[in-house]
Length: 225
Image 1 (tube, rainbow, N blue to C red):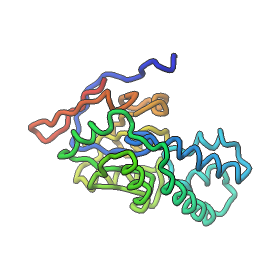
Image 2 (cartoon, rainbow, N blue to C red; image 1 turned 90 degrees about the vertical axis):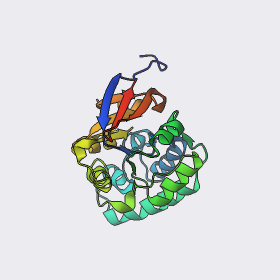
Image 3 (spheres, rainbow, N blue to C red; image 1 turned 30 degrees about the vertical axis):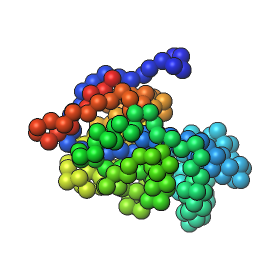
């Protein structure tokens, strides 16, 4: 398939609330992630290309546990704190995913929450760098005990909105995030090239392919494509 070909699917979904991943979904932070994680991989004698295949969507310690399975988890937690500090300080190249400003503006008065593997400081830094508003309801790394692909974050997001899992639609870009949404019993809109191969409920190349409609019932109708 040519690189410029669209893989956006056409469909209509109805939900009572939306749960939004951040990196790769609302914010393009790939430049920072590549810099920080390729550096970490090189420091630990790992193949940077193979490392990048498992980084997206997970908290740092969970990525490290996959790549260095014999290493004590305490060291993974310590390294994660170091990498989070590096990522928070480095916002060079952080930009909004196309369509994200209009998408969040349309959602402003509708039920939605951010569900990200970033901690609060990193989420704030990246959303600010991309000039995007932070949702009032946020589930960050500090909020959960398990990283995506565990569904804990999305289930907590639904609970914070006062909704059942099946009433929510997840927006995600990564394999781990899409798996987490599915495990939570939610429909998933995949965003961007990483999501296309994961067979989400629907897929968009970016957020310009979405329109929202607030229904009198309090539901949100998503027009995709």
